[in-house]
Image 1 (cartoon, rainbow, N blue to C red):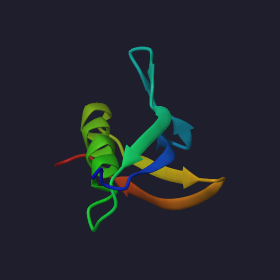
Image 2 (image 1 turned 30 degrees about the vertical axis):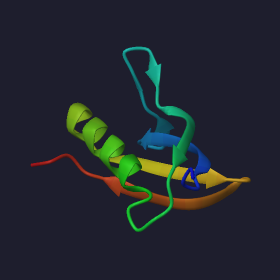
Image 3 (image 1 turned 180 degrees about the horizontal axis):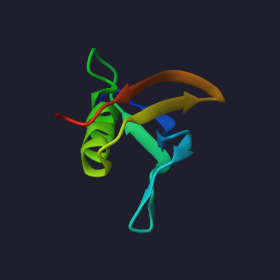
Length: 77
């Protein structure tokens, strides 16, 4: 049996704008599996970009027009 998954509109933001690096726009649809670490992939994604740009990066997961979860990651010192 396939595990249940949820699909979200997701984006990474820096200074209130969607992050774009090397022509890659960090906005799209993401499929996540439910559980206590459901949004961990988005946190890791944001952390990697925050480290790359040396600035805070916010992430957001939206479903049916409503923000389900969001957070901000800061560069690793």
